Image (cartoon, rainbow, N blue to C red; front, side, top):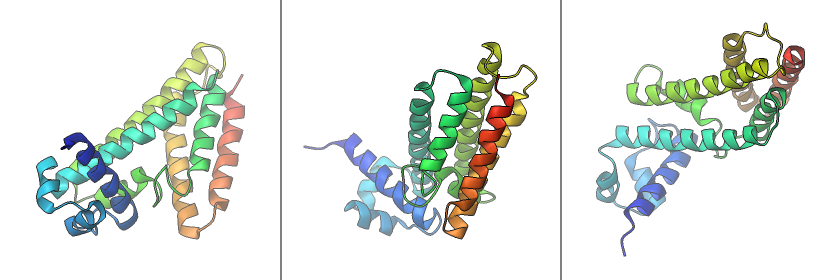
Length: 196
């Protein structure tokens, strides 16, 4: 019995692993057919072309990141603990945000910079979603007396994303977690400084 949605998910998951490890440009459709055991025709029944597959795969990865982050945030009772939970999430996933190869957002952002407009738009959308989530946590923290009222939510939401992603990049390049540890120590200090 055919399972079109199951096949589509299989293609997305195998493509995600390959794109995140090998890169979007370096991964061929042949690599994907080998990984999935499907033919090119079977893949193109679900996706218009390789570019469409890349964009849909990144959207699949982005959804996974957001869902996992939402879960760890919802487990906390106040804004400072929510911010610390996000830091801990990145610390736990410095080798890869639930997938081998590092952070999918960072990897795709670097590769899509000038050549893949659709992929770049997907990366921008994820970054914006993460930044808005941080902004909301900070604003709610101010509203409920958990974060100092003068705290600039725009500033800190950008700072958190840039610092965490930079920590992942540096740790991956060096092959150890020392840079991420430095980044997290700094961010935890900031959280304590802006907390009431």
